[in-house]
Image 1: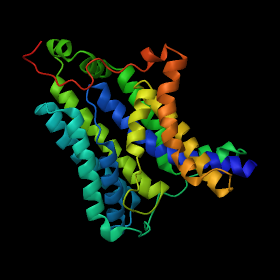
Image 2 (image 1 turned 60 degrees about the vertical axis):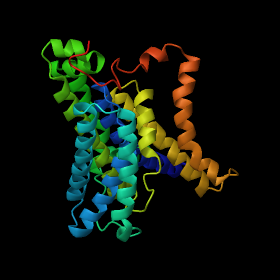
Image 3 (image 1 turned 90 degrees about the vertical axis):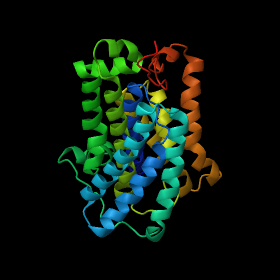
Length: 312
């Protein structure tokens, strides 16, 4: 039983890291008022570019960097269309998703099924990793897991809620006209934070193939980008809450794996559906049970609304 719990927690940490990283990037984008529905496509591109890079140069950090830069490039295109040109954010996001899925399938065709020659290995923390049950799961992971669950959400929280710059970018997401009147560069902040959010989505794809499932195949992302979008809402657009939500959904994914491995009398198709059923449940049930969740999960006031300087 102890080994089973340890295995579930370890898998949950690994699986949740993908969602947490993508959700963290989307938190930054939506906090400045832009909804990026292209996360799925950006993750797919990041995943395949990471594999291609490590096949050519067997260094996992180079693969992760390439995935991050790929996401950033896609984010710049999306930001130009939605922030500068002021095109419809939903349509542009869907275009990025389908473009990313199609392009990744095309350029990754020759790499399908090839195991990654290098991955991010385990980096156990002395003493802590020896704690029964939770030690190997929480303190015996690879270095990316530590970054995703500790450093990045802490840095994002500090930036958003404890700095003047964070106040400015939250103002851009809530009332861009007032922020503009106060001298805050609305377009610039939106452009670069959308790009940063997309870069983290690309990095999540790289994490997927370099630390979680070390092989590329078409459809590998399997809806994780859409789940990450839902986690942002469930987390109330807060970095630490989004990270914890990623871990929660990682636990649901691990439960599905355990059920199949132990031959539970449940259809495998239903077990595979658990993360997606959980997504709907955790968006709908809290609001129905506790009405205060409507306020906690409230989006920035200007989310999804293009800003026209000459229109008040």
